Image (cartoon, rainbow, N blue to C red; front, top):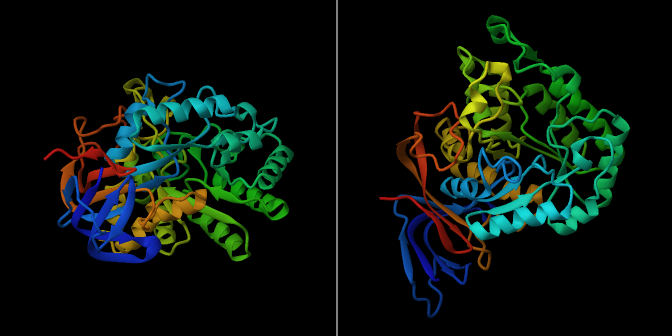
Length: 426
């Protein structure tokens, strides 16, 4: 199909492009921007007047719950939710059931995603077999099967030597290691940030040191092994300072933050709102402000959704017994746009954090609108007001503290390989 996107504000951070122009799509790829190619006849025209046309977003963490937890969600439901949120490429952590530690599981995920064709799904392979933290996985086979990185998800290493060998093996296979900085000894029983709120509510606290101590250990091993490491979902200002120093020293390190961590704090837990039960937890206002400052200065390169859909029962138990995480794919854009409204980022820099920067971390050809590239495109209205409700959510997980909030900025069209995979009804 040949598609013409007319009258939109085209923004591509990778090319430093920000201009009012038409986009011409042919054979699933971008044929031209601005000047009509010879002989081009559009079969479909999309009017993007007063809207922004940008690369489809690349999300570094979205749990789709398949395989293993299909009662919560599925690849079909969540990739459609991703398309509704402007996400055209997403990464699946390895803590599925079974764990992504064999090529067979990777093939299953690829096949299911290909059947749906709503979003590209990139599996992250397990760093250790079964995520048990004891024996290294066959990383070379996982890479050959299509894994873009390796991780032990949120499972701890009980043996630091195994952690060291895992980083060495990943470095030898030129694989980025995605790490969740969390000292299990300090965080094992915690469910909220350790501080005034945890004391007031009588809930076991999860101290800042659980993150900073783990970051410190990883930084020492990175220095020794030369591994390329990506720190996932940072939550404390102190950890950012430590990582920034290591970057200054020349180590191959990157990091991301979940969009909701840039707005919510421990105070939003209120009176035991289980939708605010997260891992890492919502931290103090000082930490939240530190995260926002780091994003604005480029010290945190990427913003992700950290999408974790749950069934209703998962959030009905007493606070600490509920399952952590929120459904976040469809709030990724509007929450991120608040950083523009707050004058922390320009629109171009924000879109960089959502597209080209995460693509660079993964080492994939995505997140840009270069001529000849795959036409993975998001079109959104930055001024459109809408209310997040059970009816507007495409994800099967409705576990979000933003339910019934009025949000600003909504995706109107998402294209994958030049084909519309989401179109907002009039």
